[in-house]
Image 1 (cartoon, one colour):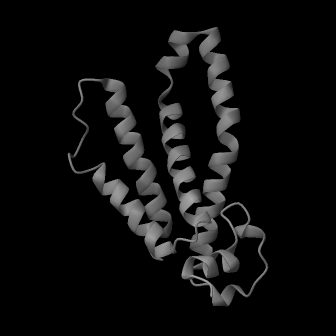
Image 2: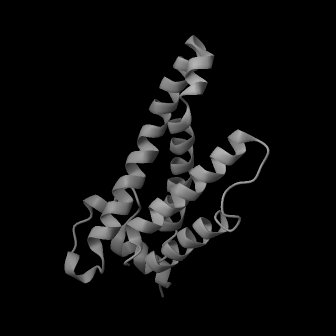
Length: 144
């Protein structure tokens, strides 16, 4: 007898294959919200290495300039981390309700202090990027 998670895996596949599954979309609640989430997470994960390599090349050429314009790299790293966590949850067969709850918990956990209060500017940037990444995940599936 299959568990609920195994049934979900059979129904929807993995995060990276959800978009190519052929099944009756009317039987899958909130199909388009899930498609948006899986597509965006897949895009982030698949482009991460290439984008980090480009930043590393730029860093090697001109470290000061690369670091002074590195805000998007913090955002990319935080989004990639969140997307990988969503992928792991999705591929284990977690329900979208559970994934939404985890995203909300991660967002609020990172928001409890309001703004980051470290004496390290980069730590504060990282905290803010984690908060934004989980909010973006939550926002994609808030109506699930």
